[in-house]
Image 1: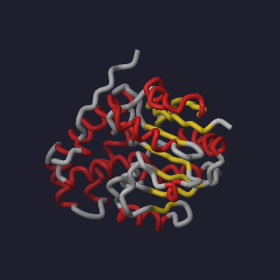
Image 2: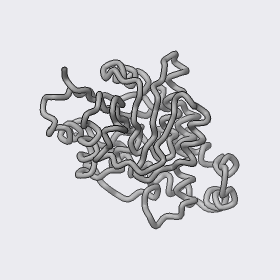
Image 3: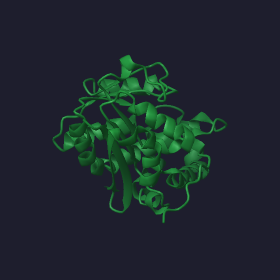
Image 4: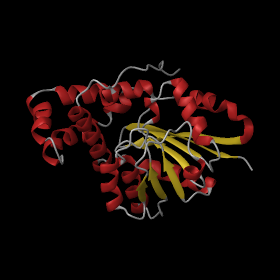
Length: 263
C-alpha cells in the first residue's frame, strides 16, 4: 500500500521565499540531473511514447527553468535517438533561461514567452504537438492536477508525464550522491547572486535544509498509477494508458505515465 499523498509546501514554489533561495534549489536540481545523467532511464519510455503518438513536436507544460527538457534532449542524442522539438511553456514563463537553452539547442528547443494555461491550451499552439510534463506534475494539488491532465489531452496526439521520484522518501535520498556536490558547487557556477548563494550554502545550512525538505516533500506529493488513471477517467475508453517506473541513478526510481488516443 502506498504512503498517503501530502500536499505540503515546498520552498521552491512558496511565494514568501526569497528568489535567490528558489533559484539555488532549481539550479542545484538541474545540475544534479545533468551530472548524474538521471534521465537516461527515461529515454526508452519516452521514445516508445513518441512512436505511439506519432508526434515530432512536443509542448512542454510547466517547464520551469527548462533544464529537464535540455537534459532529456542530451540523453536522447547520447543514445542515438532523434529528439523531438520541445516548445517550453509555463503559466509563469522563464524566457531568459529558455533563451539560453534555445541558443544551445536551436533545432530542439523553442519557447513561448507569454503565459500558457495548461487547463486551456490554445488550439493553434497545441495543434500537432504532444503534451509533456517533466518533474513538475507533483506541484499540482489533485483538483488542479486533473484539470491540467484533461487540458493536456484536449485535441492532443498524446500526453506524457514523468517524475524523477516515487512516493517513497528513499527515492530522494538516492539523489544525494550527485545532489550534494551540485549544491556545494552552486555559488561558483551560478550566473548571478554568487555572494548571496555562498552565504546560503557555505556559511549557513539554509540551502541544504531547504533542498532536503523540498526533495522529501516532493516524494509525498507524487501521484500513483491509480490516482493518475482516476484523473483520466472522464476521457473514458477513448485513450490508451501506460505506466511504469525507471531507474534514477544506481538506487532511485522515477515514474512515467503516458497516453494516446485510441483509433
